[in-house]
Length: 150
Length: 104
Image (tube, rainbow over all chains, first blue to last red; front, top):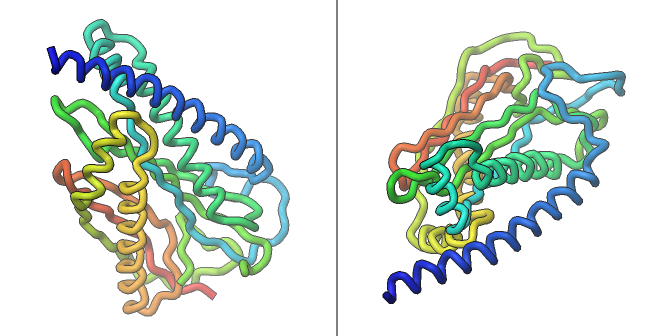
């Protein structure tokens, strides 16, 4: 009986806190994306469009490890029985990628363009039964500057 | 040392190519971070300890690659790639490689 109580308590905590945190994270992602919308970012190897002469370029990166909450993990396990879209993992990885790209952009103030963006995802932690616990997303790119960085 | 992940160095000219250089590091997370991560796994969200750990590991791998390149006499590394592999559930390997060149 005690075990069942603990289990349901964990699910309820996971659901309530997890949902609140995710909503907060998405809000902050949206705001920061809006603030950085003018920084052109491409996965092309050459600069896009007309721009000033480039005098400096450097490698920049951003990484983040995100984890899924207890409730969503349970939903994903149930989802495995019937198949279909696993929404709880979709939002997890979406958050990770957008956050990593934002950190990359924030790490190079003064850049005029970011080219050759590469994104790499790896699962760094597997819980019991080999289910996915958390993913790491790494984004790296070359930042171009039209004047020497300070 | 200039480092980029493009094939050419924008704004500079490559004069000599010196070959592939690489750096790697294997990191394990420590117990305190592991316990915190276990708690954080309950509610989801970012695991700050792991993010920092992997960031430091990448800096170290990058430093090792730069050391190797400066021994060859290079002043830049182009076409850099990162790769991550998890060896056991507790440790991950960070590998970074690129081409050492001389630019002017």
